[in-house]
Image (cartoon, rainbow, N blue to C red; front, side, top):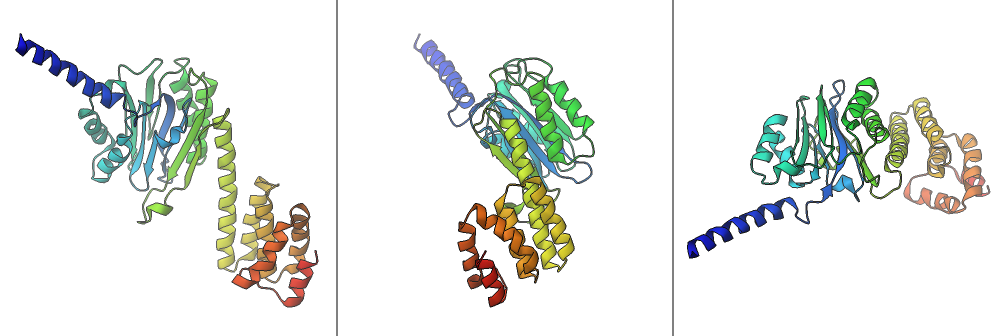
Amino acid sequence: MLKRLFSLFGIVFTCHLAEAQVFSSSNPLAHTFSIVARDSATGEMGVAVQSHWFSVGTSVSWAEAGVGAVATQSFVNKSFGIRGLALLKSGLTAQQALDSLLYSDDGREVRQVAIVDSKGNVAVYTGNKCIEFAGHIAGSQYSVQANMMLTDKVPAAMSAAYEKSKGKPLAERMLLALDAAQAAGGDIRGKQSAAIIVVPATSAGKPWDERTIDLRVDDNKEPIKELHRLYNVSVAYEHMNKGDLAIERNDMTAAMNEYNAAMKMIPGNLEMQYWTAITLASNKQVTKALPMLKKVFAQDKRWKELTRRLPLVGLLSVSDDEMRKIMEL
């Protein structure tokens, strides 16, 4: 009798441990739809995701330059992100890495995981106990996966949208896949958060500076729309960065083309207008800078005070007479 009791206790204890691993407080319930993909032209890799769950980007999406991208969702095992990338980095393929992760996971039947590696190999898994509708589609160098969806149309809609957008930047293609998922019904609970990460094809050994795109919307009624807006802002600021690089090459024409492209994308952004004007002034084009600065100062006088401080740290190189004209605006 005592032996049977110990045996029963062992079964209960084992089940409790397995359940704790599946439903751990550190592993959130990110029921969601996502895409992992590699751009065959540039080699960039990325993940994009949306869920009716707070801050989904902190749990589901993982990527590393020159290595790959991972989406871990449903009853999330967050360790799959870091461990999956480490396995890829060790030389395993996407499928080998996925097999290794699932082999040691007692909660595999409630997991949904997708991996793309730096060579474009894709591996994806949907556990039998993921909440319906749950499924995935693996295509050429990408995978779309979803669980707890309103309809069974979501993966096919995502796949079709991604396939039809060939030629566009990877980030845009993944965002279009998210749009399609939502249009097909999306998460049965609704919308709350979204995220996107894109990393370069190769690593320069500077992981702190190797995310081409890294955007999150943690809590919003329209997270995908907000993610689109943030992506547009990030592209605009990339134009500004390219303009600065052109200045370093002493290519003022290229710089102004980049600055104008940025300001066209976000016409009400005073920051962009201001620094474009400051760059013009520092490059002996004060006459062109003056009307721009006047417009900025009229909207917010704090920019004028900032301008007074710039020569002290070498960020504005103008003559005393030119500085006087600027400060009289």
